[in-house]
Length: 93
Image (tube, helix red, strand yellow):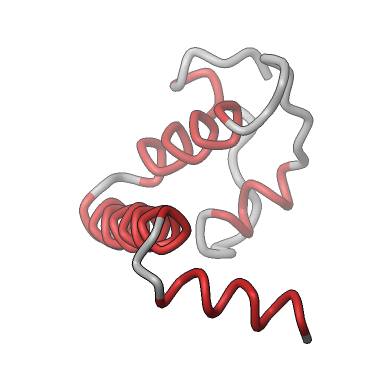
């Protein structure tokens, strides 16, 4: 509890921690908004490409191992993802 109280006090002092947490919150909300817009207006192939790029950005290498079932779940669970879809993103698959 002491650690939590320390962080809470640091946040309300309007210091570096508060600025860091507010920047993180703003970035997270921006990403959520962008994802909602993309999910509404992009084709399934474009959504898949975006998701693959976002996933690769978070990995230490350029290698991503996923199943068709995971791809389908990430795209709204509308059945199995086509094995040809990654090729449209320039991905070998």
